[in-house]
Image 1 (cartoon, helix red, strand yellow):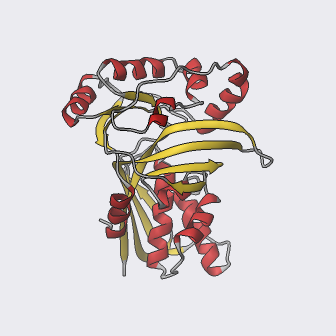
Image 2 (cartoon, rainbow, N blue to C red):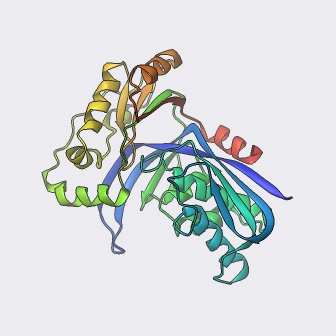
Length: 296
């Protein structure tokens, strides 16, 4: 096998609660992840020479700062016991998931790099082992080895698959700015005492009753620094979304729609210069697993 190519699917956080601080300095979370049909493509190819990362986006680093580089280096260390950078491969990233959007693009790419190299190097590591390795890279990485509708506890890296929610259409609006995850959590820590409990929001028909309580604890502090996010959320609700919220640490905002045509129309109507505006859909865990296993 000379090459492995895998889809790296985006996620949204349907719900994100910050429960407190952990002894290790991270925040203790309870979040509900949901896979989207939007994806990057990660292709790992054998070749001579040192590892190289190629990306079709100029703003994405292709050196040691990239989580894909870190994933390959960490798995190489597990396989060989050596801390040197791996040799003999290139990793090609085709990006569709925007950075600093709360959609998990970097973590998804890292997770698919682990899966691709596990196959290419014939390591035969199971998903539980890969998840433990992935958690060392980032809190979201283990989720992308599971997909679908899943509960994340601890740092968000302790994953429990849930019954998949009904498929709905999703509009993603990412304004012309990003939000660094570290900034979002810093703002939450600074302002959490002043944050009021938000009122319940409408939720999609056919979803369980707990969906009425969905919220994102990071949204209010991020909105105080970027009021445009609140305006985007309201514009999605005004356009007919059953539910809308910021995903993760932002800056992307998602709206859930029952009908594809309404979602497509909204994505077109709310597009602005410099923004990302697109229509996608949620994806159940079985489809997620099948498409990842099949590759590209």
